Image (cartoon, rainbow, N blue to C red; front, top):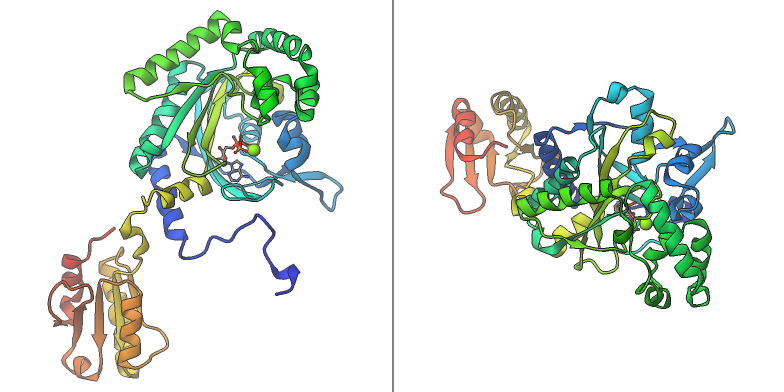
Length: 429
Ligand code: ATP
Ligand code: MG
């Protein structure tokens, strides 16, 4: 195929054989979030570039080198969203959803775009489900976010494979004092830092903690610890969160180096990580961003949220073989009809049955074919039952009913009794 007709590297089609698992995942999360009282919001995929620069921060990996930015026909600089929080805050402000200090518990789902090096679990178009909570500033809501993800891992059967890492970055004041101490320490060891960290030291020193470079990591062992710089407010908040996780029995580890790649976090930060996916082990990450809304031009409004990477969670479900068998069966009943008259009767009969059983997954054979070929297709469809309608059955106003997976004998059912019969043998979703 010529190059122009291929998908862009790192931007994947999700093929029909994969969509059942995606839909299972998405509907499981949607149901869970409904149950916890979160409301869905849908934002555009493209925003003004300025939005991301202002919110994510100019000296972050995302803004420095990962954004898909282009000029539209008006000469405006636009960017395909690399994450959801910025657009969510923009929408909330634009529509006054947090006016008067009103709390909001929101969630969104959709594609995000980052120009990264594609590899397993890391793509240029990927999908997130994100939650954002505004105007609730206590540790109770931080805990709720973690508790509900813990429940989700349980529902999906992946609890044993993920581990919670927690840290507190403190308020911006305590972080400021810590930054001074860290810069002082790292400056004294400048020659031992990798090039990237030397640069970060000037632009965004906390990000040095995040380094993958072994030499820099060695220097960091004796670096000042954020925990020693937390003010009382941050400390109390963090203790409140930990007490709640302890009460529910959610295990966690404190990771003092957890700083997150985005600039806007304060107090709580957390990541759910797995060791089952290789290098791309973070499946869900987030934290508190109490200063962001104000920084984006709104009234002081606290915020806390997280985003999970759907591709990584799907990979994890597959790796752990936690794909429920029933999700891949998409047909309950496959109808085979032979000859023009039977085909017509099959169509009208099916429509009557669908009227009575709106959730029945009934597939009618299309494109005619011999008994053998239609039957093969019925079997391949994964259906539990085949219905068979030829001239003989039509003459008697009955239809052949044949279990395909070894549950009983073939029998003839009167047209009028078909819906009632199917209702007894097919579980209605
Ligand atoms: P990473 O450290 O893996 O690059 P991040 O800190 O950049 O992640 P966030 O911006 O916090 O990630 O996004 C939240 C989640 O979205 C991540 O934990 C991950 O599961 C997923 N994610 C982020 N970038 C990608 C990507 N390029 N491809 C697939 N999933 C991604
Ligand atoms: Mg990243």
